[in-house]
Image (cartoon, rainbow over all chains, first blue to last red; front, side, top):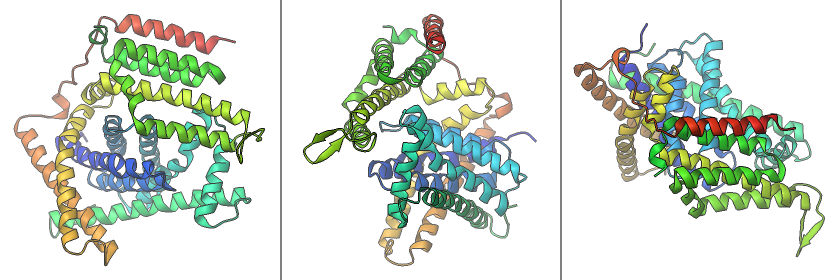
Length: 200
Length: 230
């Protein structure tokens, strides 16, 4: 089946919502250097993207929304754009992979898997940008993540593996919740717009 | 003006060459990557250098430098009661050099290229319909912001987040999304009645310049030298 004009417009709407979340909430919480800033923004982004996927359940839809969001981010006011742009595109690719692995239907399972994989990237992203590209080293980044995670989660900072595992689980759960909420949001939106009908 | 003679492919080549230089030139050679990015910016998109006047950029760089100086390596210097390491100071400075290179290079691209041109470039490598989608998304942004602001104002007048926060947030999200979808319907209908279809839309025009090819060749040579050097 071919993509229609309506499909592209719907993807533009949800890509713009994702981009808006990145440009406003994302810039603010990154500037305030709040813990788990990436987790919050990725979860919001996935909520928008996976809700959009409910309306256009086609292969590549999340990637198009991700590219739209990344392009919006590139031209936003702010000094650090390349890292977030890269993160958005990788998250979109991971969400696409999750949907592909789970059969691609806009159901709870596939959306939760897609959200979980995509949000997990916000944990792994500093390993690539700061650890490898920035030259700080993977061990340093892992130790810093563990220190911050231990402080926020109230764990023993010496138990590096335990803290890192807890952080991975936290990101996976947040992403899965975003996927599940996206399905509910999509259904409620469909009911609002077309009373008496239900999203597929 | 050299800037006017560089098109989208040339601007993209400048970004990629600066990024590759920042990644491939390790240690103190990161300064050369910064020189390359600054030189390209001065030649082709001088407004990119305005990023150096941004306070947010310097705060970010300071945090990068200080955290590296404090936590990397074994402390072998003292600044008052604070222990610093030479290794951390060196690594912090090199990270700042790399970050500055990336700032200038990305600002160069955003200063010289419009989102439509980038979308046009992506359409040519197979992402069909992206130009139209990006155009619609850009035009939707002000409407979405207004809708979000009005929704929030309405909810605030009804008590805001003081009680039943989850429900209030859910209603706010639903209202913003449903307004956005209504607007999307209007745009889709307007596009369809004008005969627009993704299958028969021409890709967005790509701005080309006389200096594109020479700049790409020079930067390719430079990157090849970087990659091949012992």
